[in-house]
Image (tube, rainbow, N blue to C red; front, side, top):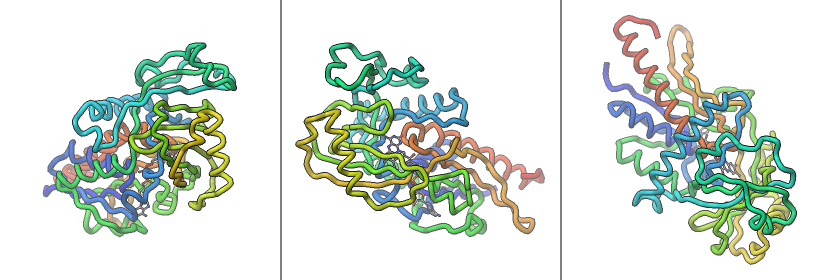
Length: 341
Ligand code: FAD
């Protein structure tokens, strides 16, 4: 059989990392990325890119932990390499603080991040409105640099990239053997997934280089995440809201909430407002599917629905999607020698 032709639909963190994992596991594949938008115009560009997992209710915790561990290990190695600054990957230490102490003492990811421990009384003095907290060091991906770094690596391995909106996966069946659907919230329309819904997030990206530690309110709504050049201040979580327009009232609310956690942010400069739609589901859709139309078969691998935690698990889910592509290739090789798909 000739080199399998794979089309990856989508160029956010999930599409780019999936294409890279496919090239790593199947270097003889010909991989093409087709996407309506590339960086800096994807949801992934809006994200803070912090490695603090979000929980997917319908995915077993040990699977989520494995995805997180693989992602952490991969990015930790980049943060320790000469590539770190270009890739926008860096370690960041800080605190997650709670007004009401959570019942669950240790989150499932506490032994993956570095130095996880309860905050001391002295540290908690910084947060007079909060009862308890956790201190740890994690990783942060700055976007767009991380997406541009992934694109550069992909181009170096011969992956082609085209700007194109795909209205129907069947458009691609004449040209490609396997389609990998990494369309994020776009999968709602592309494959009619009614289980996928947007959770709108508005954030501010500001210049305040004196703020070095992250601060996250345990309710997940208010956060301060320092990047290499800018700090992300958040946020909002608005289910089923498809609006990409920034709301000025929300901007003021986010700024005030963040200043009450870190008063020095009053001096922040150059405030930019961004909005993104988290592609949310009860579980990430990581699945092989064989579509069939008039006796013709189309092999599809889905990898979308990462919600509020796409950066935290992207490498783990990309590796799993690449394994599913490997299974499709084996099925194709089997079918060219007579077996069924
Ligand atoms: P996207 O980045 O949306 O990429 C989808 C791609 O598919 C795009 O290129 C799009 O153009 C393309 N596409 C869609 N439909 C089609 C079509 N029909 N044809 C062709 N191309 C198509 N996660 C974390 O882990 N940590 C964080 O700190 C964090 N912060 C966040 C803050 C905010 C405000 C938001 C909104 C999200 C945050 N997230 C965070 C979540 C994270 O951003 C997402 O989980 C992640 O970006 C999803 O990546 P994706 O590649 O699936 O989607």
